[in-house]
Image (cartoon, rainbow, N blue to C red; front, side):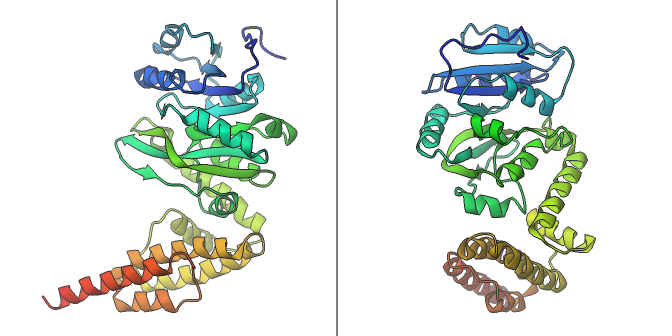
Length: 346
């Protein structure tokens, strides 16, 4: 039953923007403004005030744009339950996520809607992003479904506030955020979406993602880590992997690019990646799997350069091969060897 405080837009919006706010007044104006300034205007903007105790509600009410729909939670439900509430209340063909401290670039909605309209089998469409605040980086994420599906066995490859979802497929497959995954609700949902629909990221920076000490990843780091572990373990089991706790800890380090610079780590990583490659090759394109596995293998070898020529011989003589990255490996190898020889020569 639709709550009485919610009045749906009469013009049947193409997109429902979904934002949940809890004590977000510091950056809220920038975030709301970036949505209202979109080149695509056929949307409703659902903002769920999750019982904020700061000035967030007044900030939202200061906007007179009729596309904004303010929904007040009587008590603090948390992000996961608030997002599920918003999905149920949304009227749009597509649902676009937005966080209250991030920024959408002006053409974000226009380009995502055009892509979703042209690709009716896409369930989730994200974008590349640029971080700002404590860290400045460009996040170039995998773009096609087959690549994304493989990467999800290792880590999350969507920026949550960049995604657009097709609502009729969410309804058809009864997909929503799992309340048990309070701090990794997006990653867990994407893994289930990947089993029933196709996923994509637009290869263009269309969102700016704020990095600050107030983020969930900083305030609840341990809980988020534990929940992400449970997702990876579940995905490995679904893949048919047979592994010990020691094997999983290795998989986790490979996933998070935290390399132990030792010959033992390199050897164990090679064996594990070959095993995962074999399991994945039964489910998707061999070339895509080979390139992704080789990318991780090359990172391990390149990061372990202090082990000397042994690690490079291990890298190029391994059964782990990747068609796209071979040239970059040879180039990096030559540069590394030249640098090492310079050091040895004094």
